[in-house]
Image 1 (cartoon, rainbow, N blue to C red):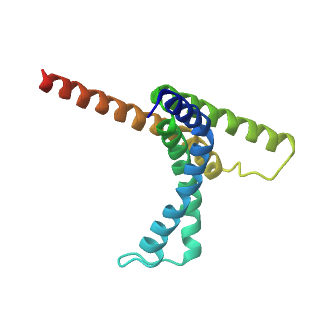
Image 2 (image 1 turned 180 degrees about the vertical axis):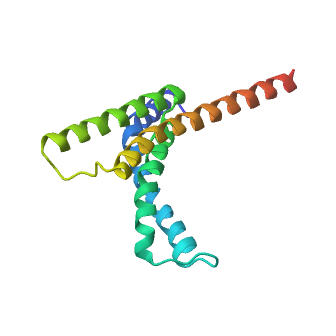
Length: 153
């Protein structure tokens, strides 16, 4: 691969960080739904009506979306994945604050019950789990590359 092609690929990856994180946070909802459906509604040990699954799915969806937004966006970045994960986490927190402020200012019907606030807080903090996963992944890569260099000498 020539230098110009490598540079273009790097620029495109940087441009894809935010949209890729958003897409991953959306796509994770499909497997979540089907896992819950096949374990809770059609499960062998636990069986419940599909409508009873909805609160569980509504609780878990923003949490998993936050994790995957930070994790996938950082993986798309060509370098500095840990720093990118922090930036994406801050971006998601800022976005949540803006949406909440707009909803309150426009007097929209939002869930300010204990359940709604807990879901908002947990989904906000779940992005930190994405940072942790990216950081551990980077440390593992560094450790394995150091071991490879150590065995080569």
